[in-house]
Each structure stands twice: as C-alpha cells, then as structure tokens.
Picture 1 (tube, rainbow, N blue to C red):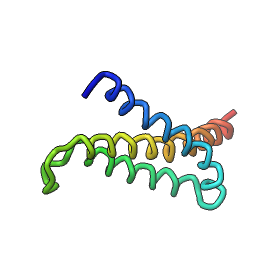
Picture 2: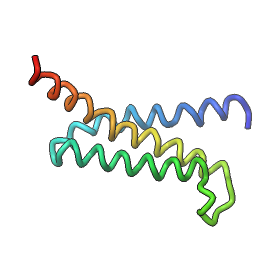
Picture 3: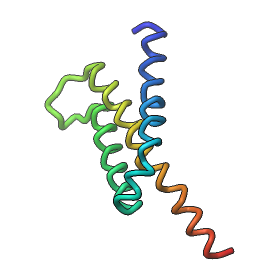
Length: 96
C-alpha cells in the first residue's frame, strides 16, 4: 500500500463517524441510550474481529477485512460516544 492509501484507510472511519454522529440524535430519540451504546459495543467487537482477524475465523487475513473493520470501528465509536456524553452529564448533574 502507498502512503496515500494508508491515509485514506485511516481517514474513512473518521468520515463514517462524522456521518453517523449526525444521525445518532434520531436513533437515541427512538430507543434508549443504553441500547444504542450496547449496539455500538457489539459493532466494535465485530470490527475488532475483522481487523485482527480472529484465529478462530476460517478466513485468510486480507486488506479488505482490515479496512472493513476500520469502517465498523468508526461506526461503533459513534454509537458509543454520542449517547455517552449526555449520560455522563446527567450522572454528574444530579450531584451538583
């Protein structure tokens, strides 16, 4: 891979995070924040299994799996980080 391709591979998750963050507000209005966070954790687990790859998966390591894992990591991070911020504020707000 060239340096440009590596840069694009690492920039795509950030782009997907940004796009997904826009829609997280609508998703958290339809279901609880805890459910969205749980879905995000599940997406992160799948992303880590693809990026690795897991030795128990019967697939050969390939660049496609790693880039797919990176993309899912960006999506899962949006599912986790966006709903967590209001939850943290609500948790601290009760004390002060």
